[in-house]
Length: 297
Ligand SMILES: Nc1nc2c(ncn2[C@@H]2O[C@H](COP(=O)(O)OP(=O)(O)OP(=O)(O)O)[C@@H](O)[C@H]2O)c(=O)[nH]1
Image (cartoon, rainbow, N blue to C red; front, side, top):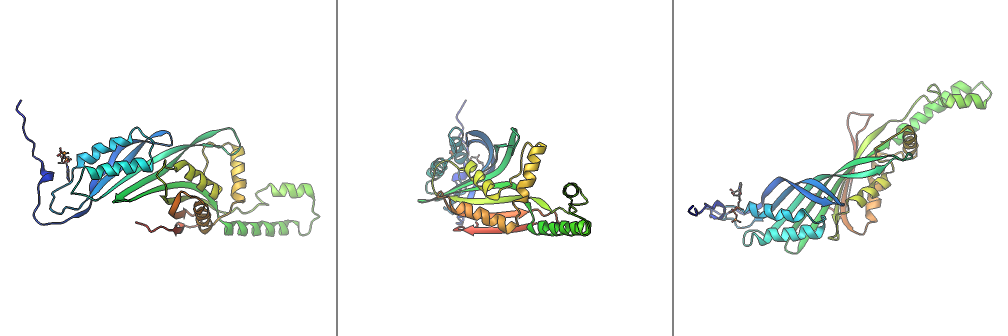
């Protein structure tokens, strides 16, 4: 068969000159290794097109370079080498490269009391960019927790006090009767509202080591105190009720706790926190944000 030369449109020049900020591919399905697991991610990979007369970039070169991610544990160093390869394959065309990986990590979580365990999914995004010597890695992570409204808890306690006053004002305080009253719905007349809440963390990483997804999730859940559970028996549910009762929080409290915990980490040089309490009192959410050394892109 005769060799036929295939037309290569990308190397054509175009009339006029207009550089482009970013050109690449979005939504590429890929396996990566993260926290020892093989995870399916969706990747956005691209470069700037600085040469305003060049018709296009070479998509296939970016795509093929992504195979570097398959076997090695995901790290800042690996992403940096990959972005260097993006730029090496686009000499004279591009000066900036970026890669975003989106996926869901599964982490095993033990029950509060019983010997059971289960899995929790943590949506994450790792974003890396390179321009000259400027290399940035950012980890974005979402996690769910329970928050009980402190105001609602105080109002509920007041109703219980009032009911106690009504029921026992003219009676002798009998231990058995009070014990039964405390265990009844007529006694404990009100409960505070609580909600499933979500923390969105955006963390700029200092080092180029492995991506600290697990340790960040652990830190955030510890700071929040009442992460949502996996396997739950009644004994676990009771422990969860106690944990919530001792961990009342507004969205402002949750944002401050996360901020305090993240400020302690030496591998974090900037972060943004957004917490969303999907209120059961309202049809709208209560939201708080905090940024440290971080400007949202
Ligand atoms: N630049 C560009 N390429 C596109 C686009 N949509 C599809 N492609 C295709 O991506 C394919 C790969 O492009 P290249 O990397 O230039 O392929 P190639 O010329 O065989 O590879 P090299 O020899 O390394 O340049 C081509 O077949 C393009 O048609 C687009 O919007 N822009």
